[in-house]
Image (cartoon, rainbow, N blue to C red; front, side, top):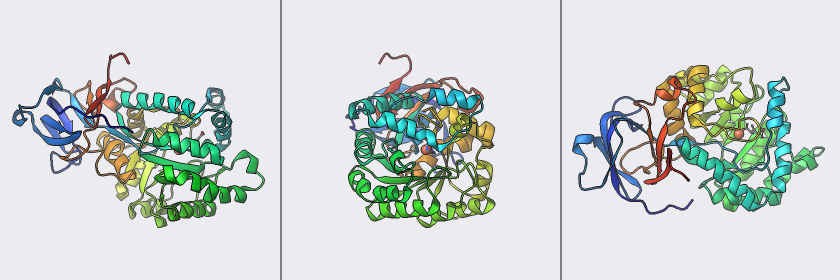
Length: 401
Ligand code: NIG
Ligand code: FE
């Protein structure tokens, strides 16, 4: 993603600033009241009390409202074409969700040009910025052939540095009778084509997708090729993959709608972040939400993401995910905000985003609210006034685009 040169400035008169740096303020969110921050060269240069701000820089008013770090979305499937609203309506009328719907999007994605895929993804990124997200991981996974997977990761790489090769989303339709041949393709020619444009490798390990053994093989092939692993696990049924995810040091294991006590203990004693996607559980009308409370109480790191994709969760909205996390997964509002910012950064193994310390990327969001509690207290209300990324304004409420 190209970074335009930002203008240096100070944001002043912040009623409540979330830094996510416990050394800068109160509690794990590092809260500072009556705060200000300064931005120099796209980085946070200073954070403190509004009365001590550097008066030589141009100032921008926060009008006493709340400022948070930009959301870090560590799980999205933005490279696709087509629409599955008919499938969604049928699901709400009683048809259960299955991984097989991915193939509908695959047909549309294969016939789309790189330009069409990029325009669609850019539209969704604009939505994300409008709802406060500033760092985005983007997966391939709707090509399922060498040419379209390569096209997908190339398009993703034009939009983010966090590109994930997900050739192993489901078995490609033309390999349905020989799944292991498809696994070999994913580990061989397709990996070779996608690796130069990717940072991560991911597998959908679940009913109707890949087994734990196939997943292990694919992730190990990716690791040998220089990619870092992450994994979709236990969305549709209780699987056996957590041990494997931890052994391979996956940066995150995502979905986790089904977990045993032992799975939770394994995650809590690992560097693997639990990437929870409650908007997906909502949109698939899952029988249950993940056990976020138990994960947090055991000491596991948790990230939140909307899991934007055209099938199981067609929303880009992190505030909606926070509201669900609080209402349905019994996370406190503080825990949910932390998971949507610093938790996402941990899931991407990034220390330059998800917090507002000196030296962090100047990615932050001005709310039209006195506190971030409003994300859960006022569900569905658009509360973002302005979003900055690398010190540049990328969204202003009410501005025509
Ligand atoms: O994260 N779980 C696997 N992949 C997507 C859904 C894909 C689809 O249904 O198109 C997800 O939910
Ligand atoms: Fe996903």
